[in-house]
Length: 193
Image (tube, rainbow, N blue to C red; front, side, top):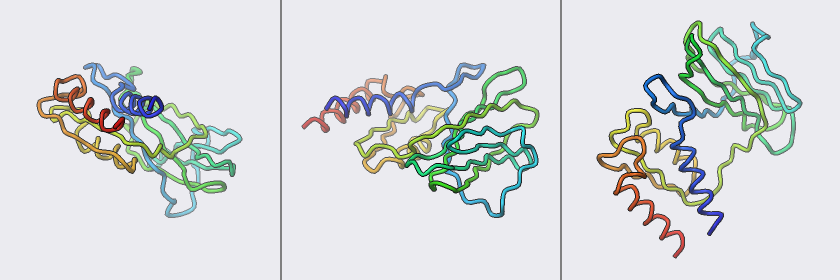
């Protein structure tokens, strides 16, 4: 039971936590992408935008705005390239991750449209891209302009046993509304019975 509550709390925190802050104070949603096989062999034109570690390599190719991720180890983990994109003036406006889940000795790309003349930070690490097979409740506020219900459905689709509920009249923190609190309590009671 304690493990289930910890996982539920972690998922709720992940979905609701602000990763970065815009000038208006709104949360920025993390962009999660599973890399795809490149249509043609990938050739870097700017090798200064790469990060190399023993587990793999991660690069950003500005000619086409591609993130390129290789996995060099047969260790059961995925290679993941985490990125942050800043407006001029160092204001974070987008961030995300590109995962290579295909295994050792593979390369994958994620195509993104980055703003010209913006600053980009990248970090490569080994990650477990598989999410736990546990019941998950995703609450979306129908008034949330930053993370609409469709984003909640996309997050829930990563879990085999997830349910999405749109809370009427709620904004970005639907669990704090009376209806959201009731739905959360009902969900948790179903898991303990």
